[in-house]
Image 1 (cartoon, rainbow, N blue to C red):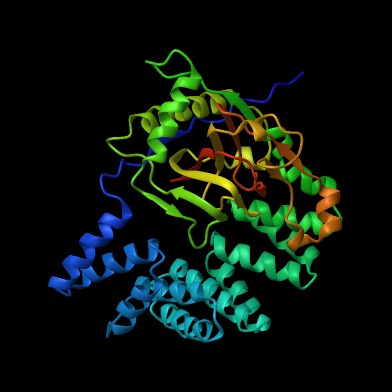
Image 2 (image 1 turned 90 degrees about the vertical axis):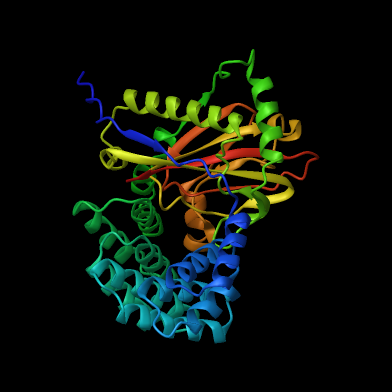
Length: 402
């Protein structure tokens, strides 16, 4: 029997460790900007304020700038959209139009059009939104937001066959990213082609489940996980939820790697080693496998969940391969017999409908401390609130193509 050839190697880089937390960086930027209103300082403050969900500061700074650049106007558009009011959406439409006028290349123009389309949808202007998204993908077929928003618009308007057709066309032309794979899955499933959707999704065949070995200095994994949990719970960069993420009622650490976080460093080293070993042994001809990037950045973040916290349906649009390592899991989850606290893969019923989602099926993953799971970034997934005493602590990550 013919054996599939090994896939090309992938070089994995790690994000640099951060000495300062976002709050500390933001405080320094505010003080520097208060002393002198230089454009570079203002733009740095805009960027940090946006990352901190301080949209009022972003709006005030950009609107006070007599000559905002394309990037500033993009930030303004996003900040206004984050307010989610009719008045702010109307202002976002104007800001996106200004960003489009300031675009310096097709990629910037496509990004501005994708944002403009989001404002059009919010304002009840679907025809204008479709025109903007179609133009965006003509200018830059790789634009993830345009792909995501056109897919959502197609599903809302019962154009599943059109969605399946244009997503397949882009994939055949060599465009490949998580949002496009996800769009193809949604289009095929909503068109009634369940088997085709399941094959493209590939989660059942492409997900991997492993247990990490304890790093040097630890006799067992339980001891390492206890030290790692203590380090993450004391991390100075904790924050509640985050606008634009799937997290609800959770604590997050967006940048867990720090010079004074040796347990995090040991975990990331272990993840890189295991992922590289997995990919070295990978065989197959799935389109996702063929899209393997030659170089990728490991981007990691921590999620700490009490009884009411959960993650809504989402994909990891910037990743190629994604994963999760469970540091601490309450016994009620690890030894439970229901979905509470578990990770579920499937399709979001709010996009494809209950019947389509049911036909596609779901797969439930029960967390346990020490479990490392990896899967294609385009796989839709969510978590359930666990309702138990204690906290579920995990570190999620993406391999993001460079």
